[in-house]
Each structure stands twice: as structure tokens, then as C-alpha cells.
Length: 267
Image (tube, rainbow, N blue to C red; front, side):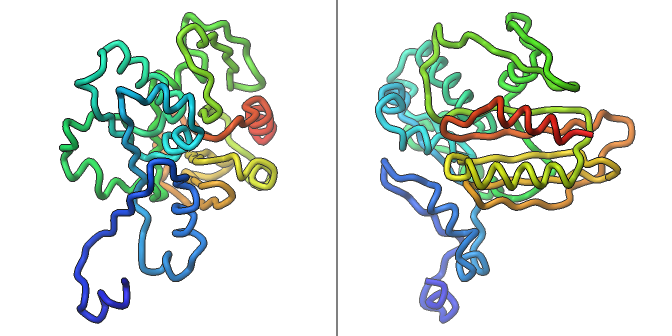
């Protein structure tokens, strides 16, 4: 395809890859990291997941592939919301946010969406921004007044919420880590490499903006399974708190192991 374009036989600005309904997006995304020929000539912009609001609850319960598609997504489009009860759509949206708090959710009205909502999203670009759903982040850091929270080491808090009264038990789920204490670069690098070796196949998407001890600039990283990339981000504002944020999305990941290990990497 690239050669035909270079020869003037094809003309295109972008390539949209539509997988089957039960496809795992992971191997497709990894191609852009692992295949030098592909990575040299193409940039992976984003993974868009369309969720059928009328049948999604049953599909998420029955198919792990459906959960994976939500976990990999950079944006989630809800279809058939007009055929579903508003209360059920609200429950579904809450479930999707727990599975993937970094993917914005919007409705697709009869398949009509603004083109700028699905193209040039830059979901795989390394940058200093890390958007996490505020409600999810407050749950993870203990700001929910209804939570029974115990303080962990340092400034990070552990919160155990009883979500099961209205929640489904999904193998694919997300959790976040935040701290105002800086990381020791060597300890963090060693710990993250260890996580990838042990849990990499179960780590769908992960991303972080972190503060390193003695550094004035942010460090940003993200990855898919065992493929992780990092770079230097923007400078930390002088008069604002320096808060590291990380979000991990994966299959049955041991949250407490991740959290305790990250805490031990703090200065």
C-alpha cells in the first residue's frame, strides 16, 4: 500500500483499520511498535471502541474480548442510547469508566459523529497530559467521603470501596496511583521493568506523568503489554504541586502489589 502510494497509484491521508467484533486490539497496536517498516511510515493515532448501549452489559459479561476492547480504547462511542433506558445507560457508562477511566465517552447518534472526534486524537502520543476521569481518581485517592479508607505509606492512600451493590465483576479493570513525593529514577525503572516481565501480557494500557527526584521536567510514559516508551515532558510549574499520576488497565492485575511497589520507589 505504501509503495503504491509512493508510485502515485493510491492516494490517501489516513488508514482506518476496522477489526472484527471479537478482535483483540492489542496485537494490532503492537505492530506499530514492533514492526520497523510500519513504525517508520505510519503513526498509530488512537483506538476507538464502539459500544452497543442496548446489549453491552450482556456482551461485557459474556466476552472477555469485549472487555479488552474497552480497556484498550482511547475513546469510547456509545451507540443505540436512544433504544436504552437512561438509567441503564448511566450504569453502563459508570462501568466503562471503571474499566477505562482515561477514555472519554460520547454518544454516536445513528453513527453520525464529528470527524474531529475520531481522527487526530493522538492517543498514543507521549505528552505531559494524562486525563483520568475525576470521579475515578477521587475514588482511588480517597476523596470519596463515603469510602472506608486506610492510609498507605507516604502520601498515597488505599481505598477499598464496596462497588458490588451495582457493579459487575470485570476481569479487565483500571486503577490509579498518585503521589506528591518524587520517584527515585533507578528504583522506579527497575520496578517497572519487573512488572513488564511478570505481568506484561495482562497489562493492556498504562500511562503516567511522573516526578523524578531532582528533575525540573516531567517524565511521561505509556505502553501496551510489554512495549513501553518514555520521554521528557514539559517543565513543572513553579508554584503548583508536582503530582505524579499513573493509570494501569489490565486483566486481574494485583493492584496492591503495584501500589506497594511504587510506594517503595518514592524518595
